[in-house]
Image (cartoon, rainbow, N blue to C red):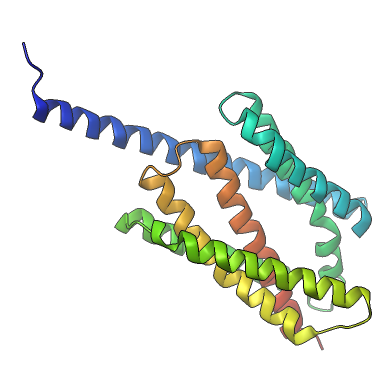
Length: 229
């Protein structure tokens, strides 16, 4: 007896939707937990008054985890611990930066505005994709090109500052560029989950986490400059 092709197609489509919804649900659940872990470790780092040297070491360790360890463990339960370790280190690395802004006269307001702005951008853009279910995969090439350009600019500014050349206008433009780029990545990464481009919820969580993290730090810099007397 032959299989009904229409029934088979409908079954495959249903399975695909269920699989996508599962990845989406697990991703947002994991994302919420990792952001909470980062908030806790950032608070601990602020309380311990960790310096930028310690923050740099933790960030480099986090990069090693995400680039070399997670790809090998993303399909196992070990990957969950790697993701939590990564986000804990990233949160702690943010401690010195938060302490710096909180020393400003209106530092608490700046941090809260950055948090609010980050939440507004993320929920608006991801909500738009979830509602319309549009495919933003076409943005991949543009986003990667933009990322390479911004990394090169960032390295140039870092080298310049090491030799005594400070360019505040270029630094401000870099932060604005990162805000726009991360907004595009939120659309792109959310779209990949919905349209089946990303089926591993741990990798999806890390992608969205980095979008939010970089968006927040860039908004923090922009607001800090605008409110600096």
